[in-house]
Each structure stands twice: as C-alpha cells, then as structure tokens.
Length: 273
Image 1 (cartoon, one colour):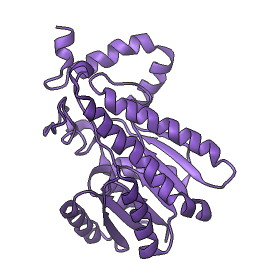
Image 2 (cartoon, rainbow, N blue to C red):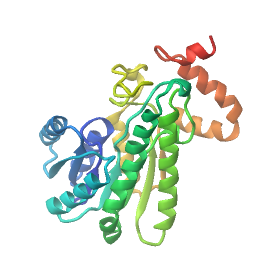
Image 3 (tube, rainbow, N blue to C red):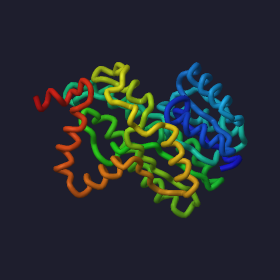
C-alpha cells in the first residue's frame, strides 16, 4: 500500500479514522472527508501525531453529488491520483417503523447508499485507470434485517447490491471491489444514531466494552484490501448470524428480536410486552 492514494469518506472518527491510521502508517497517502471542519481538524492532528504524514482533509457532505466531485478533484490536486476509495460514511437509526418519520429513512439512504454511489462515481475514472480498489463498509445488517433499524438495514442491503453489481461490471477492468461487513463495533455510530423523529440518540444502547474495537476492525479491512478479497464478515457472531439466517430464517427472526429487545430502552420491549 506504499504511496497508494486512499480516499476515506466519514474519515474523521470511528472506523474511518482507524482506517486512515492503518493505511497511513503503511505508507499510503490519505484524504479523509467529513461534514464537520472542527472534527476533521482534530482527527488530522491525532493522525499526524500517530505518524500519518501524507494527509489531506476535505470538508463536504457525502450525500451531495457535487461535494463528492469536489472531493475527488481535491484528492487529485493534493496527491496526483486516486487508488483506493473507502465508502465509510454512515449513520444508523433506532425506532419502530410504525413510529418512524419517513424523512429518517430518506436521510439514511442519502448518506449510507447514495453517498457511496456519488463517491464511487466521482472516483471511478481514476480507480479504473490505476486498477485500484473500491471498498464499501457495510454491516451484518446488510445480510440480516434488524428490527427497529429498518432504514439502516435497507440502506446496507442496497449498498451490498450496488457493490456486487459493480464488482461484476468491473470484472475485466482490473478493479478490486470489497464489501466489508463489521459486526457490532465500538464506534460513535450508535451515539449519533437517529431516533423516530430524526434527533440523535446521544447514548449507545449497547455495552461497547465487549465489542471489537474500530482499530482491530480497520486492520482486518486493510488485510482484506491487500489480499483483494471480495467479502469480509467480521466477528464470530457476525459470521454465525449470516450463516444461520441463510438456512434458518424463521428461527433467526425470534433470535434477533430477543437479542435486540435486551438493549437499553428498546422499543421492542413494547411489542412483546
């Protein structure tokens, strides 16, 4: 990965920042994007302190097509090329569908799905030219729909369909496409998760101390990129969930419901009394 130019959307925190560090310390040149300038500047400071020297930041909204075009142009201006795009920007939600304002689902699709579509479209000419990689950070929720997370699950299913179709289209162009599916990972995504009216959840409903760290997750994704893997499913729980859901979907409905009903203030508790 030495001297490869890596563009990471949503790169100012969580898995995105961890990816910037692991690729950067391996000799890659990094551009991280995000909506909040202060968060980007703080992330850049931390990354440089950790030894990531070839680093640029871009403030923009991944859900806007024009911002993604500007991001790709800025990466080329900064480093002369683009080799790898990591579609990491994402947001989650937690609410029963019947209570949910539909604007929440639209927002999730705009960021989680269309954000990846726009960024990929903007970077694709460079990636094809350099026979690089397109990476999508999906989720186990892209294999198994999660109750009280209908919008999140739908966006990840859509992302995985997009990546699979794209991987097949680019089969003979020398472009590597990876769909990476972390299980529950300790990051700030649950703290910024949207509630039924679109406001932020603020606190994670799960105990994150026992989850895979963002740094460990990033190392697995880095290795999968080097090996040009097509799929990466992380954590034993994640692998088991995908396998069991394929063969025992009805039984998994009950298992997943019961597991998520144990979350703090879970709306599912109201459903089964």
